[in-house]
Image 1 (tube, rainbow, N blue to C red):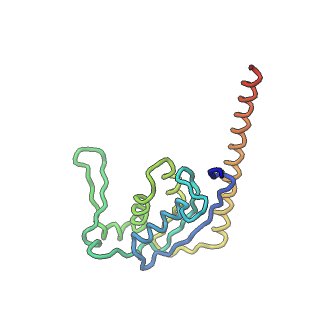
Image 2 (cartoon, one colour):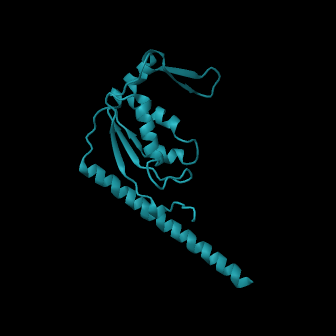
Image 3 (cartoon, rainbow, N blue to C red):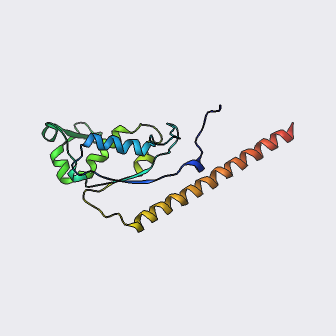
Length: 172
């Protein structure tokens, strides 16, 4: 039995819409991260980007447990001496509730060359944004166009490799 390796033509991306109303932050972030990685698919591979697109609605209504609303902080640094900035959870929730979910999911994804591609497929909205049929169709068309372009580029690379091999064999 041969080991199965994922091909670009085998990847079928779906669009998931998750409502974060009254859900626990960590549990929602875990669910989103596994969808972005593609762990729910039979063809899952850590070295290939096989995950789906995820849209999160009502990020401002996500819940945290215990004393986290008062104790949790978000940190960033400007790379200058003394440039540490601390933002409390409550302030972040008022100003940028979508970033709370983005940071939680960002920390749960693998830190490798696929990380940025996975994060691009995550859209987070603070409030209830209606997802119309037209928007879904436009997203699906964009994904199909990208698949066709990448498949064409892969075929082109294969042809170039075959030509190089043919030239090497001709010299022998």
